[in-house]
Image (tube, rainbow, N blue to C red; front, side, top):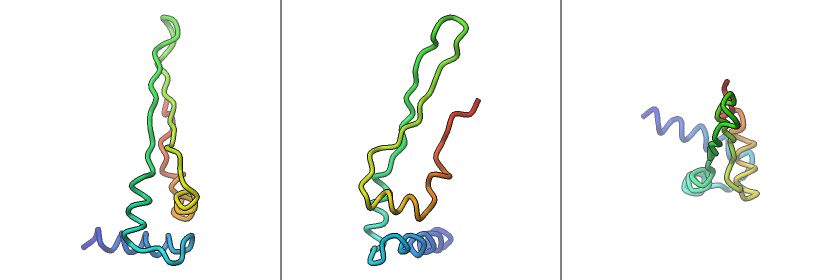
Length: 80
């Protein structure tokens, strides 16, 4: 029940960016937004491993949804 309520809330929020968005379209577009972590080896003996966080290429619709839903606030970043 909580999951359905949450999905309905997200759908209402997303409609601000895409007014005729169906629930199925919302789920399909959001499933295609991915984040990758690129791991790099140490540089020298004292250096620490590095990680770069990269989002998949997004369509204009996905960019609008991400902005409306404030997904950038959820994006992982480097935590030292």
